[in-house]
Structures are given as structure tokens and as C-alpha cells.
Image (tube, rainbow, N blue to C red; front, top):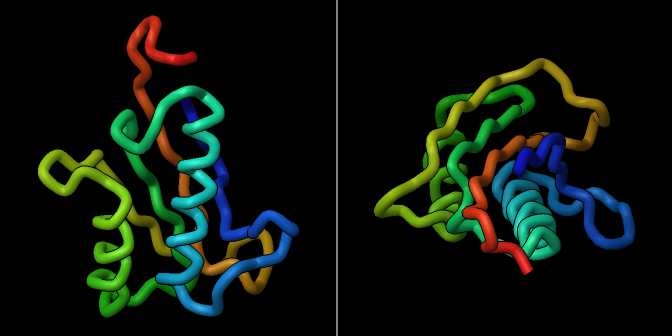
Length: 108
């Protein structure tokens, strides 16, 4: 399952959060909703790619803290973080792509 371009939009289509951590938490909530619709959950995530506007290394502990609330920290998915100058909207600070592996017969 390939999940591309997950961004911090809430259910009303508004950007949620003013900082990277708040936006990432909403992105992960959106990914979780997509996974539920596919009949699975975060345990099936094998890869995450983060695109972060104006990335500064000081953001990393906060990003990891949010990530660790969503993924299995004992066996985390592979990941890449790419700092970018801009994303599709000036208020969006983060976008995430993910890959999940669903075993045959796993989905409902």
C-alpha cells in the first residue's frame, strides 16, 4: 500500500497546527485513517519519508517524539527526512509519504 502526500489537513480541510510537531501528529492521524480504510494499522508501515519545510536539525527530537507515539519503536519503519524550501501551501510545514505491507487476506 503506497500512501503519498499526507498533509496536516483536518476533517474540515483546514491546516492543523502552527508547528512541525502539531502538524506531524495530524499527518499521522490522517495516515492512520487511511490505513484503517484499507483494513490495517500503523503496524503495517515499513517506510516513511518526511518532507519538512525549512528543516533545522534542532527539530529532530520533536519529530522523533511524535513519530514514537505512532510507530513500534522496537521495530520502527525505515525512514528518510528531506528538508525542502517549500511545499504546496505556505502554511504546510510537513508532508509524509508512507509504504505499508499488508499480508494476503489481512484486509477486511
